Length: 127
Image 1 (cartoon, helix red, strand yellow):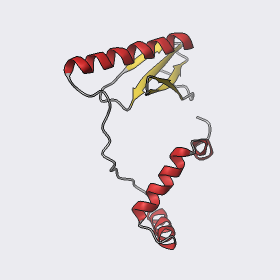
Image 2 (tube, rainbow, N blue to C red; image 1 turned 90 degrees about the horizontal axis):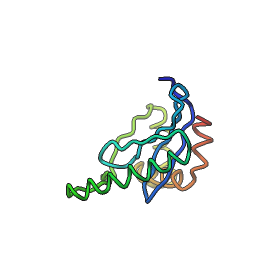
Image 3 (cartoon, helix red, strand yellow; image 1 turned 30 degrees about the horizontal axis):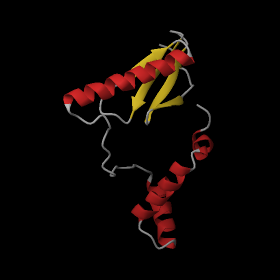
Image 4 (tube, helix red, strand yellow; image 1 turned 135 degrees about the horizontal axis):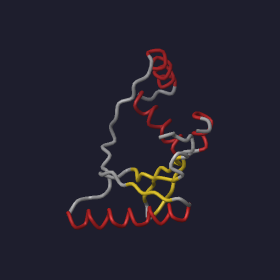
């Protein structure tokens, strides 16, 4: 399947889905992110895609409720990041200059980036 570079998001009822387009199949397809299971949907138009997400999320929540499990993925707040030794040194020095731990420095940078989503386009460009 040919992969398009178009990556967008769709939102419904507090859930977010990554949206892609398959030129070969001429269909939009989505995957709900931040949930414990694989929840997908598709449509040949934006309206069909929105309806597909609404139905997929509704069915997923209903299934989780029937099974007595939480639909939302739990995040521990801990993850590993691999960086080059040069970058590790640079950010360690920066953290020291601000008299904060490396962990607090990285948390602050991530918090800033998450509240300034326009930085994504600057860092990653158009995809």
